[in-house]
Length: 112
Image 1 (tube, one colour):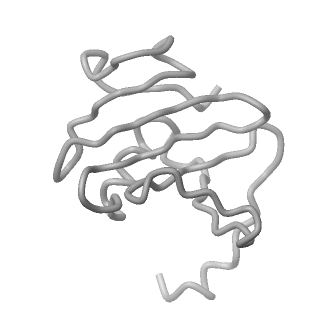
Image 2 (image 1 turned 90 degrees about the vertical axis):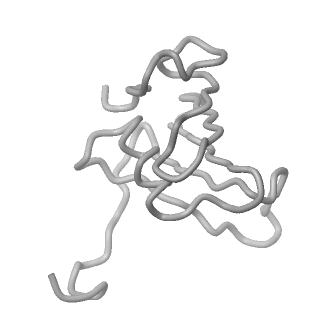
């Protein structure tokens, strides 16, 4: 299994502490509220901060708390008809339990 909470156990506030829970995490720049679950065929982590959305470094930090460095996870921009915004300063990481996330060729992103 690659999805599991790997952070400091003192950060946990609720849940089983492995696949489902809530933690207040000392992130690279500020405290991050992290809610995580593995249900319905998806591994999911939401990350929020007071006052602004988490930045790339914070999301990468949290990604590494739950998945291995070579695992692919994604942030999604769903169709407007399926858009849900419960917390304006929250971003999500997703990974399907069964199935591969297709990636574009690296040359389309930029030179290595």
